[in-house]
Length: 161
Image (cartoon, rainbow, N blue to C red; front, side):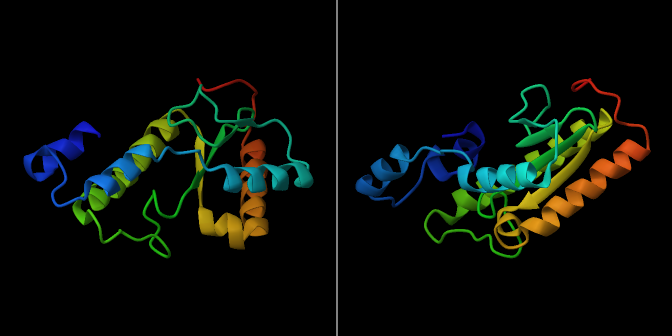
């Protein structure tokens, strides 16, 4: 459990959670945002968008897609984990934990965006439901951003800094 959650929970742990449920939740491991990422990646390929990296470690926050020449970072945010106003929700069980967790994720996203932008990198964020329901619009927005950055002369090639 994350330290900040231990600090805010009464007694540093969850109260009233059945041991069987606790064991089940401890066993859950994230597998990444695979379905959404794969869908977006296929759309990039079909659109002929070149020169991008996935999960770039050279950029803070490790964007899902990074375009080093145009210096564009693209994040695909899960509606639940990042607190989408349209379809995100806070579970009824352990409501305090989930509210704090999602709030912290949103704050981290804001901080990451600010850090990246200070280095002249443009940030695009798409919600999971946008990739699912409006993929063409997301790709179009990215293509417009790429074109705009090229026209501004940002596309100089090179990595993060």
